[in-house]
Length: 310
Image (cartoon, rainbow, N blue to C red):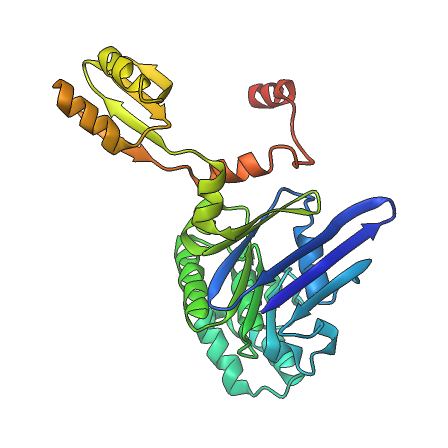
């Protein structure tokens, strides 16, 4: 697992990470979310020993990364998809990494196949697209068959087939009991992949819990109803504490009341409902609510309008 305690990083007067604590446990995919400049990359770099903390500790499988005797066999990392030497072939790149840990060529061929790179294994990395570099980086992360995986934006540049592949791979790795930490800005992918959610903003942890609990905790479910007697229905259920959030013609959206209660009232009063559905809050809604005051880079409304016109 990954354990972080009182982790802090200062760059001069700037506080990039502010005394954060969290534990990433095995058997689940943990999504790591936060606005640009929130401290995600700095945190991951400290976990894998690329940046030294100002204070606090970060451990992988019970030890600081620098103390791991064979780090490639303990934690697989992808932080920069374009870090491979451009003049090396994909195979030679992976073979060189494998040699540092006594990993044989058979495993190199295995991860090349796993990443879908068989057709380009003999080609130089300099000619690779971003998606191919992502696959190569993931192959490198898996070389040592590690129990812990840390991936930063692994779906960037992947085509739909590649996105499905990485989604299935991450679920498989977690299903095998590995610890998986995934950073991404794509809410749709996070919703379909992550079990647990860690949200950071301005260097502090804003949320840490199962994805569905985090979403439910900061969003409200809306019940959408469509009926020709909307005004009458609203009058009846308002007495039960329902709040109307939208009313356009026959369509009404309400909060603070369950769909079952609306259906019961409608049935008792002989009101015909043409539609009734509960719309749960989305991860995007939850993320925006959590980070509303912690986004460092935000366009003003006037600038956004000017940009749209241009």
